[in-house]
Length: 615
Image (cartoon, rainbow, N blue to C red; front, side, top):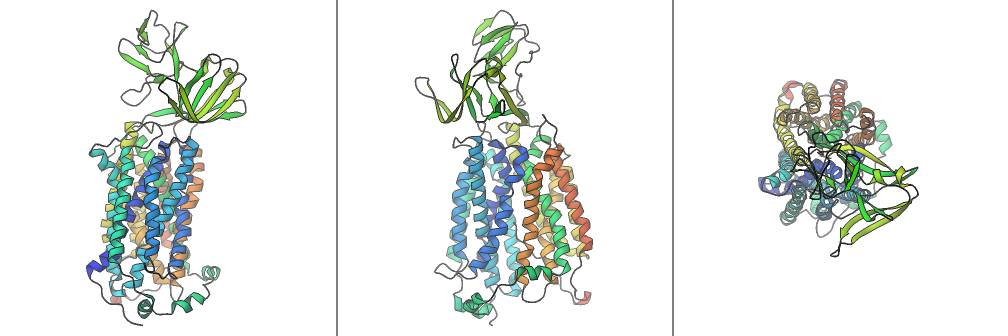
C-alpha cells in the first residue's frame, strides 16, 4: 500500500471549504428554528418535540451516507454525489422554511409544513456534511490529518459565526425585524436566502477544485479491493457493544448529560432571552372556542347569523372588539378613543402601548377615562367604560366559520379560503380557550431573536479560543471536568441574568463546555480502541450524541409543564437551570472514565484533540 502524498495548504483548504457553507445552514437552523415555530403559533410546551427531528436524522442519515458512499463510484466521484444532492435539497428547503407562516396555512398546517421542511433541511445538511469528513480520511496522510481537521474546524466555526450573525446584520442594514402576526421577519427570511446562496457557491467551488481518486488509485493508497470488501459481512454491532471497552460506556454517560443539556439550549434560548433580557410583552392567544365537548380551532374565526354576515371575531389568536360599553350603554365601533387622543381600539383590534402591552383588557373598567369618542362621535357619558368582544354579546343560534385566509374584494365582500362551518345551538355558551404567550410579533421578541444569534457567535468564538487552551492542561480529565462545570454555570446564569450584555459571560462559559465536548470524547475513545473495528465503534459512538437529544426532546415539554403555572407564560428560563444541572452531573461523571493505557510521560507527543461530528 502506497503512502499518501503530502498536499499543499490550499489543497487541504479546498477539501474542506464547502464545510463553511454547510455550517452556515446548520447555524441558521440551530439559532432560528424555535423562533420560527413560536412565530407561526406553536405552543411553547411543544417546542422540544420539534427538535426530535435533527438528531434523529443525524442518527439515520450519517451512517447510511458513510456506508453507501464507500460503495459509490461514478463520474462525479465517490463522496461528492452525496454533497451535490444534499446541498441542492438544503438550498430549496432554506428558501421555504422561513416562509412557513407566509403561505396562509392554518396554524396547524403551517407547523406541519415547518416540521417537514425542518426534517428535509437537517437530512440534507447531514448528507452534505459527511463527505468532507470522509474526503480527509480518503486523501490525506496521517501526518497532515491534524492540519486538515484544524482547517475544517476553523471553517466550521467561521461558518457558524456568519450564520448566527446574519439576521442581526440584516437588521442593521435596514430590513424589517418585525412582521405581521404569524409571519417570520424579513431579517430571518433573507438570512436563510443568503445562506442558501453561500452554500451553493461553496458547493460549486468544491466541485471545481476537488478531484477524487479513481477506484484503482484509491486502492493503492488505502488498501483493499472494494469489490471484495463489499462482499464481506458487516461486523455484528450487538457483539461489538457487548465487548466494547469500559471507556465507551463511561464517556457515553458523560455525553448523555452534555447533549441532553445542549438540546434544551437550542430549544429554549430564544424565549428565555426574550423574556428575561428583553422584557418581551405577553399576550393572550386564543387557541380555540369551546362548545361543550367540541373545540373549534382556526387561525381566523367568523360569525354568520341574523345579525352578522361573515364578521371576523378572531384573527391569528386575537379576539376582536365589537365595540365599547359606557354607563351600561353599548356602542358598536371599530375605533375607540379616550381622553381626546388616546386610541385604544383601531380596526376592531385593541392597540398596544410602546412597551408592546395591550392598553386595555376586554370587559375591564378603564381607569382614568374622562372622555370617550366612538368612530369619531363623542359619547356624552364616559363612566364605567369597557371594551367588549363579540363573543360576550352572542345569543341563540349561530354559525362559526374557521378560515385559513380572510380577505375583502373591491366591493367590500368578505372572502374566505380553506374554510369550515360549525353550527352552534347556543352561542352564549361559547368559551374561548387561551394561553399566555410571549408576543412573537413584538419588536422586543424579534430583537431578542437577533441577539441570540450574537450570543451563539460569542459561544463559537469562545469555543475556538478554549480549544487552544485545552491541550495545555496536564490532566485531560480535569480539563474536561472544568470545562463542563463552566458550561453548567453558563447555563444557570443564562436563566438568571436580565441584562443582555451579561449574557456574554454565560455564552463564553458555555463555549468552554462546547469545546471540550467536541474535543475530548472522541480523543479518549480512540485511544482505548484497538483492532479493525474502530470505524464501527465510532459510528456507534455517534449514538451518544443523537440519542440524548432525542430523549431530551421527548421529555422537554413534560418537564416544562411541571414547572409551569396555569395562566402564566411558560417559564422556559427554568429549562436553562435544568440544563445546567444536567451538564454538571456529566462533569462529575468524567471521573469514572477509565482511559486506555497511555505512553510514559517522556514518550508522549502533545496531541491535538480529535474533533467529533457537529450533529
